Image: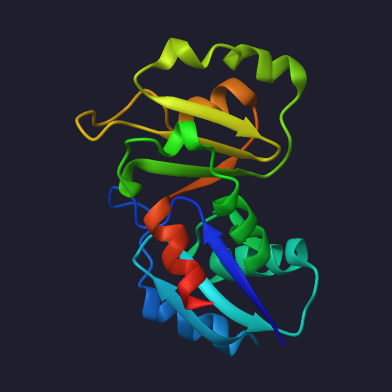
Length: 179
């Protein structure tokens, strides 16, 4: 059995795509996943499976959600080791002086093209917010006194033409504790 983490995008946000996590846990377990647990209502799932291929597992979960609830949601399945690496790679400039609830990790479904990355070439244009893109992760932070910030999932997806899902540092740490 392998432990995996699933991050759903757009579940239970602003009253849209409502799914009760207990209901989802039961549904996922009945589909063959084991020891399914969830964290908060925004689609954070930890489970065990015999299946190896994370992209196939993600597609299976996406299909299960679509079939049962009628929602087509983005689903990212990753290994705990990848999440540990992402957390360990948090650039100091992003974390410096920021609370963990305002430090974000956007995990991309694919690497953005160089042309698209050039659209975000000047991080100073977003100060006092900060961001840094490393491989398929965008690390960003917003000062506590700013809400909402300019930097968010929609901005990055629109500029980079790549989809992704975002979690804050507290959520990432809790998911790793759950594993």
